[in-house]
Image (cartoon, rainbow, N blue to C red):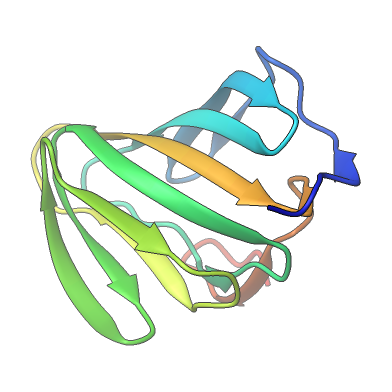
Length: 124
């Protein structure tokens, strides 16, 4: 596995977004772990990452992951891998928040490794 040359995350980092929130729960040499909460009826931007792969584990709620144009239904206990450079989006389709644990792995791990292609909130 490649070693990390840049991880700008710290445990406890968090942010409120128009679609919900995220919080960093663990940081290691080759990974970052976040808890992500997507509000009902909301979705992330359609995006990809140049430097990281993501692994999503659904903790609670229902939703859809769209990866390279293919939709996958998500519910508690499901997991899915988003390869580096795959175009993807996470959507909450239920009446309650969708909560996932996200593990990022890659050579460069930082919040600026997001290339937005489409966004419901005008953040292109």
